[in-house]
Length: 211
Length: 211
DNA sequence: TAGATTGTTAATCGATTAACAATC
DNA sequence: TAGATTGTTAATCGATTAACAATC
Image 1: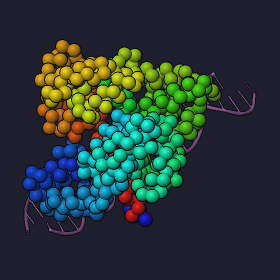
Image 2: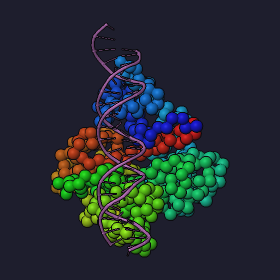
Image 3: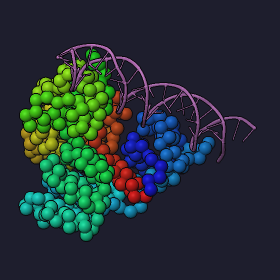
Image 4: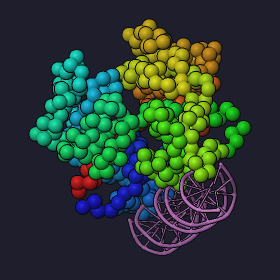
């Protein structure tokens, strides 16, 4: 029943709006215009208005946007009232860092389990959860229906786990591996974080500038 | 002297091409057509050809692309022959994880220094380098001219360090903070990795699917 | 009422996709 | 030569920006 389709570029901009508006709220600013906000963000007033209007326009003509309203609306959109259950797969260096990240910030998630294949890691405490053997993944999903999985395992392990997740109720994949979950199963909503790709493309741009 | 302008979307796709082509090379595949590669990547043959042609077309009409040539060309573009010197700023959990990341993969970088403000972290070994006091940053940059900085400090610290980096020879910023280096100094080439934003936007999409 | 600023439609811009001539 | 596939131009699509009427 996904009513009106919001484009991906707009969705990706929402968290940034939310951060800036939260700052404004903290500073006690009551009202802001699209052009003021655009100047802060380095974008155009048109884009700000177009973006906000995807969600039904919470501004007032002649006045601007009430910071408190804007903040509440963006928070509702992004945090959605109740936290999503997320599981961490892979409790190595990256996985552990991400587990802290998930739990610390108010990002709209609740870490409910962590898994690893390495016996040395099983039983370790990771914030609110204890690392389980990855062989318990399917059973855990069946019993608890987590909605999102953070993938912090090597590519081959991700490929092996993909069918297990596809059979579960997991819909969202926060993917740090190179395995392409979206290609494997179009039903997944995938957010890739390709750190190596990111750093490489930065390298290309920096080298380019000097040539 | 930045000759032909390559668009950002194309640049961002290059690392993925490189990974897939490296796999093909490992599998001993000699030649590949744009349509075969497109099928693997989940894109169109047109896009593959358009992208490769930004760099002067290394295919052969009637035949396709020689995997070895493709691999060599992409490697040259992305790794650029010699490694870029990179410094790590912030040796907390995230910074340490990223230092391993930078050093381990063949991403075209050489970690040359790490900095932190916390006395407890100063002196720690981080792979090839030892964490220095951040007060030594300006002097280090002046003496060693690193080209890229990885920013793994809180937003306020990033804001304070921005002018220091702007005065140095640092051009590329791999930014994990929310401070906007591109806005502060348009001369920077910035690659933002906003993990919280990424996870939040995934949450929006997952919730959206169920409403 | 006059000034300001939104909501929304129209114009522009850029990126992706399709088509096809060149050529291996 | 015939078939295949690139390089490249043209068409389409979508996102951004500009314009302006509605309205606080």
